[in-house]
Length: 239
Image (cartoon, rainbow, N blue to C red; front, side, top):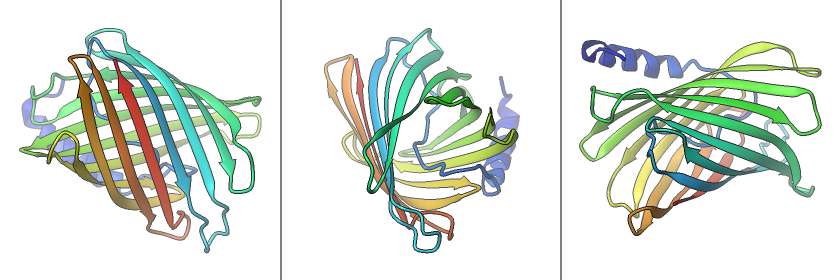
């Protein structure tokens, strides 16, 4: 585990490195937090809808992800996903499958920042195309404010893919105004992505174990390679 006197410089270096991160394709999806509820199970649906980019001529792209996850221990959470995608004039089609493993590395509040790790393996449907990722999760609270960084290392391989290492970054600054309304600002960086925009998060609890969480935001493109705006929506039912 990180020593308390090393957490601050490590976190600062990671946040600075994030501005130089790059990865193929759009990295706009979601920001993960480094926490595991040992009794949690969840159903998750999330979607992104990217506008046409006049500079690149890309058509509108839409992606949907449906997943089920459960805690395996006090510090490990596993999830299985299936994803679909479509362009503006096409029907939704099956894109691929993924499995994720989230590992909470430190107890919440144990150090100046909380740490976790995310491991993901994806396969495209009907193709010999794979992607593996390892993501460092870092979160720090400042009273009602929290700052979260997701810094990823990605490997792609397959018949029609060039084997290579890539990196990605997703940052979130959130204000905990109320459980039903938490405004945030998110930044995403990738080889073909530079985006920044507002997001609203919230959670409604139904008893001690059940809750519904939601996220709604729009990420604005900061360069010619990124769609002018990408809407993102996520719903998560925990039980």
